Length: 196
Image 1 (spheres, rainbow, N blue to C red):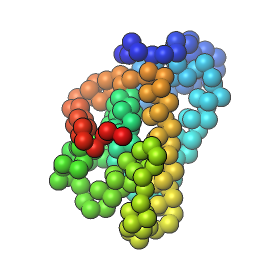
Image 2 (image 1 turned 45 degrees about the vertical axis):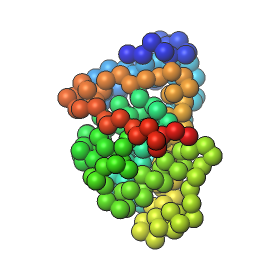
Image 3 (image 1 turned 60 degrees about the vertical axis):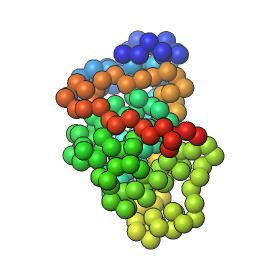
């Protein structure tokens, strides 16, 4: 649990609140502090949840690639909640956990294919401020994935950025979801590659 939350938690109430708590307990075993914080503005919470649910239904881009990209963006931003939840979710979706553990240090790891490395580079390039996506990297991904998948990947990484930056700004941190189901923590990010 986090002591650094910058907005106090709110009591989750009402019919929608009961549904949110039931869903959270069913999928995670508890109600995340993030939901209690975001409960102060249910319109933002509902929109974010709706976008997340819709994004899960997109199928032009491989789910594994999107999962690695999400973890890469979260790692670069430093969102421990996103990494914790993303890793927990990856386990439930059958992602290669050995690779998922290596995402924060993908440059030093030999676990990734050339396409996966391009996707990870793209996610980080999108996440940097200012964004650092190159024409060459975009062209490689367009050639290998096609336009619909590249657009989907881009939107997915954008959503990951919004979520991760929101959590970090509000002081929302990981809650041990990955550890609770016996998963080892993710690799530590490379210091050289995360400074920007």
